[in-house]
Amino acid sequence: MSNRTYKLHPISAIINFLKGLKELIIPIGIIFISSTFNSQQTNEINFWSDIFPILIITVPVFFYLIFGIIKWWTFVYWFEDDELRSEYGLFVKKKRYIPFERIQSLNYKEGIFHQIFGLVQVMVETAGSTNGKPEVELTAVTKEAAKQIEIEMENAKRKARIKLNEEDSLIFESSSDSEISSKLIHKMSSKDLLLLATTSNSIGVVLAGIVALLSQFSEYIPLDLIFEEVSAFIQFGFLVILGMIFIGLVFAWIASVGLTFLSYYDFKIVEENDRIIVTRGLLEKKKIAIPVKRIQAIKIVENPIRQLFGLASVSIESAGGGYGEKEKKIILFPLIRKKELYPLLGELFPQFDLGLNLTKPPSKAKSFFYRIDFIWVLPLVALLSYFYYPYGLLSILLVVPVVLLGLWQYRTAGYAILNNQLTLVYRIFSRVTFLTEKKRIQVIGRRQSYFQKRNELASIQATVMSGVMGATAKVAHLKIEDADKVFKWFQSK
Image (cartoon, rainbow, N blue to C red):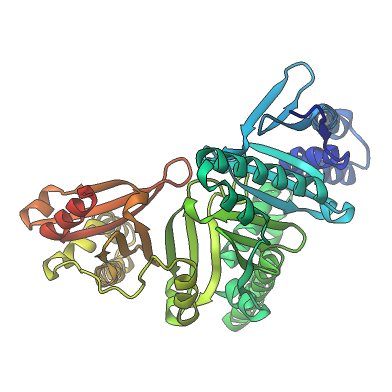
């Protein structure tokens, strides 16, 4: 039992304040720009339109500041009875008592303030951390204090193992004192970061962010004047317009490369005893420890562009959170060549066989992959043809990509069973390979619609524990005997 309590670093008050302030960035920006714009137009300051909104916005800002200070001032944590205990609150005390044996991993972040003062943010993940949020979050502590938590946790777990295996206590003692074996598995190069930014959807995110930002200030943008200028500009020819669009896309690509570089800088994977350690980030360094026993499934994703060049990304479905907060998915390989991927996965997860032959849907299932899309395509074609006749008749060409996508999904779909391993392969647009073990599966579902029943077809889906809702993979329109085979395989011991 320990009577010593520990406090967070004072910089955590500022960090908590800035976290709350992020939610007010857009309102503060709108008020500031509108006040500046109004004062420039009228050449005078109006209390209700210029000063009063600023006074209103200072109330939540002041609240977040006081809340950050109070949380830092009252937050304490200590070690007692093989538990990590924390407490904070001024009028309402919030307490967390977490047995060390329930702690699955300690994840770390280092933001700008952390790096300046040599601190780290510690997020405590347990088996109950299924919503992406840690059980306990130590906003800012020294690296020595973070190491002390690891030591206390390992000591507590070692005592629990010895208690359960008293006859083998000497073996446990000797193994715990040995040095931690650490092995570098993979590290992303600058070339890989460039490929990641180019083949990901980050360009779309940048463009969407620009549109969202402009929409916030649309009433202050002289759209009529811009429209007149653009109309005059179009007279110079479509090549000039295409050139401007190209330049805009280049700037969006540069921005996406910058965001990717900041997020995945120094990305590396290290295997350490029974854990996989993933670190990444430049301005905000993140480190997550993934216990191998918590990994429920592996998901290999190939979007059409990456598949064309033999590239893929790999994520892990884990029985817990990711990097904390809103990040629930754990990226194991953001981008990697498939010829390099299989040996690495074989090294990390020797229980999986990646070269299995798939059982595919029968040829009579082809139309099932695209005809459901006709429910929305045909009414759309009818409306366009009616209101925009005769040019609207060209919308009938939408049927072609819908059918081609369905056939592509048909050729991709399949499953394989080997001993206790289940492999499901499917696509919506990206090709997904889902690998899991029987003991990790929570639910196996077998579904059959009226039309599937007439054609002796059925769909299967498997769900593993991951996040709040779990992670599900589905292969549609298999032979009914194949679907039954998967169902019986899961039921057998």
